[in-house]
Image (tube, rainbow, N blue to C red; front, side, top):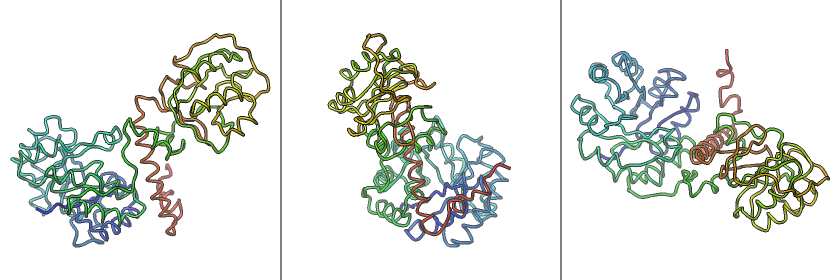
Length: 428
């Protein structure tokens, strides 16, 4: 069969999903999927709306059915779904109930092997049971950890004869790889739904699928250990805070040099108030692009000033964060060296040499470990633990891309309240 492009409408607002679907259809989408978040948000009315608006397109209801298969398939089919998705981890009895209900009510069944451990064995079982399609799905949460691979697709397509759908992190750059791996249905979500021009994004992915070519995506690339800094340059501390479940910035730490942005990994320093010996020694230990993070007990006198900033700038350090006092701020601002501190004072301390470098520190009640990522801008300073850096940077990028889409919808004549259906989501 010719590869099919299925667009996953993973919104929670039906109006936005419907508008996006129209752009996707105009761009060449073959199938439209009422995504699980959309179905959970507005119910099967979303399927009814898509069926009414797009009578000649295949409509997929991603029910992710786990139980009561007959009821869920019957409901989705009566609402207008041509295909209903059930989870492969469901019991065989549930899958068979779905297949039987589908035959009775005119819907085909796609079994999603999401989180199935022995996926090859299960794929063969599902084919024997009588499913119409198999789905291989890299979850959103796995995508955020950088886990995107088509290796499973190749293995499954060699073992089964029914059509295989693949979803998770697919864009115009890698869609051809999914086709080459044997996928019959290419399911695309964010690469289209987060695009400012969904019609164009759909058209490019459709072209990439049909011609088996890679087309450079307009959206940001997925984060790896190698490009974290590049992506963090594009997102704000507000984006990162949203991505980290409303993580607070370092309390009481504010920007000394407004208009600058700081991104780097932490070189940590623990010292006593006013003892600037270890902070200065840390400059020598730090590498280009690092941020010096100083725990000075949240008190003065100053442990950092213009000369330390000048020395750090000459080494191409990314900035400094001080839970304590800084001085010479006029000169530091003139240098545009990114500095964040709790206190400004003209009074310097003395270099006594107490403290440590390269140990976990506590900055405004937040633990900071060596090599954690430090991001600072006009909104404050956010810490990303280095073990979670890829995941949270991916999530921050996801936040920004979604905001870009909303920004376009506002520009098209909406308001923030109307676009996000704010009144609907106020807690009752």
